[in-house]
Image 1 (cartoon, helix red, strand yellow):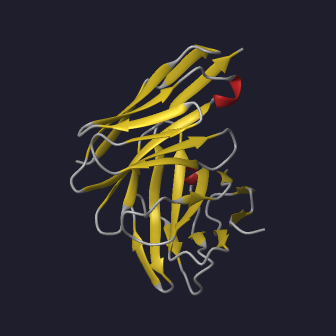
Image 2 (cartoon, rainbow over the protein chains, first blue to last red):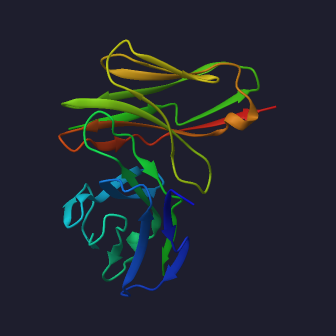
Length: 114
Length: 110
């Protein structure tokens, strides 16, 4: 099916482990985003990418690494997971910059760091 | 500092009882204001984009309006299936990145 998918949907890990969250979109959208959603904070931007091999930091990038070797994929890596990174992570994409720029969101990954 | 504030945090309505959700914002270089709906355990679903003061958009029982400092999401004769969290966001800068409010959780009782 066309759209934006995330995997895994649920993940439990331990402090200090490396974790990679996957995001895949089938629309060939230029822009992709990673957000985290926590109670009391709403959605906060972690990293975004304007195109393959172009990434930039958002509001809360510390402790996260991204890459984008292909347009359709945008993995998010927690190099050494901490309990404060327990959250729900959403990937999103949009076609272009500019006014016509609504973002479309994936179903989310619920990550628990013990 | 760019900021988006939504009120109330939670709203409980009876079926058919119309009301409004508020989104106030302070942002330099506003490119657009967005409304999303989020159901429990799911990602946000796009509803509307508003670009200029005075603009209005409608979808079924929802109508979004925009002024220079705030936006309202009016819900007319809501049904239980309208229960969800409604998120407001503003886009800014050359990339159009979004700043989200914390949302309003709407519950509609039959």
